Image (cartoon, rainbow, N blue to C red; front, side, top):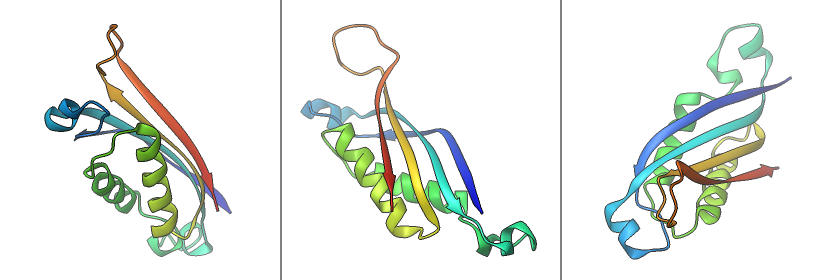
Length: 120
């Protein structure tokens, strides 16, 4: 059975951006995820974590990847998504969104972000 794990607006303070100063100063980023997971009877019928993917492990993986600087959000989102697929074989597909709070774009905006959709 396919279940979807949702993570909404995981907050990180990271150092991503095209402008060199963005990588020095850093900014607040929010990561949201919908991951379709092939869940086994161990999780559904026997209440065992081994039959699914731990959202705590997913969060740990995202936080580690967000700590590695990138210039482009597109690159970062793809890199995080690929790592999740590589680390968690039960994830069949995912939609990952990364938003950057208060980006330096010359106009007032709460956040700008990108989404990536990946599947096996």
